[in-house]
Image (cartoon, rainbow over the protein chains, first blue to last red):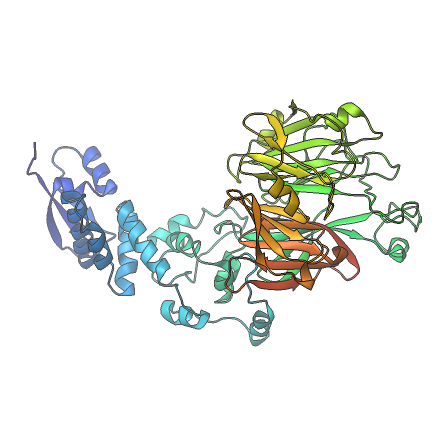
Length: 151
Length: 398
């Protein structure tokens, strides 16, 4: 039953990765390409994703396809996203492009969690956001009730 | 970036977007928006202008705001300003307005009034009736504000149809015609259905005093357009009351755990009686004694959490109802700020109370430890807040 068919994925920078077809199909975008591409589509280009990111994405798919019910899946996911912010953003973009919902949700949630417990200033630092309020606007902001009515 | 280019035509807020600075550096905006949507808007609004703007766009779930129905009462008022329909009769004050309080900017904005034909004249005070106000009853249902009963200039029922304000469109529309328009009634809502019971129309009629009707607004998602649902709107009669003892004055009914609950007189009155309507079984039952005895002021229910609160009229304390023990437990000690509660709205983890004869809005955060309380000033000094509602912010008119 297990076909040992493999697919080659090629990143934007020309790196190639041979993966089991079952693992590749975890990406709905790849699945669609295979289904519509004809019998000889064994190499699929993924020009939106660089080699480094693609390698990580494949690692994620492998784990989730080969051991979806394993007890350590949660801890795998937690450790998987312990990466720096830039990598996290690349993972989010890649998972969107490659249509891998689980990874998109995981990376999005990880980014959202980075807001927790932070002050406004800390948020600006973390996400490299420029404070573009004028001093007058800042003064108004300070006056606005910090008691958060419903929000 | 390719992704953000694809999305640049996708916005539906009427602006042509060129998405230059990204909301979150490193991510296209269509990925950043769902992430930011999970963050508290009050936090986002303080970080930068773009984020502050975002929370008011359709890309961000509309946050809750406070809505107030306000009577502008000073008789000197009616000569000078607003009432262009007043004929210079300075003794009547019929200037009712609707306002919304933006919790981010802490500012009140006036809402467009309902436009009806004939124009709406709601009586609140009248010189011949010095000791009492005419009630104007409103309620919240399916994420909308509904005006359900009031008295008009000619001392007849003012509303032939409920008037419905939908924050999603920022506009008013008419509900289904009332079979018996009331000057006051018992009114409340539960799970997207309005219940109207008893009360008095132009004159007292026994059959109206016993009648109970419901209107299922049928809105399964807050984004459903009311205009699509209106053809199905109608009042249906349900099991009636056994007598007219609930017709004496305006009664606020609340929906709580599958039942519509109401008490027939306001406040701390020994003789008061309560009944509950079991929605599923379509029958009325006596209210349990513990619930009645503690129903001593304004009552409201936190819908999602299914918790009933009362603000005690005399002491200004807040209690919540324990339905297992049939008793009320104090959650906030008596406070001056809450005495004389006229009306309350519960939502977003807060209890908002109209107190001090309508001149004060006090907000209580019952969840916080220790309990926090603060005052929101009414829209303008000298105005009287008649009722409060908690709904999503009004969406920007295009």
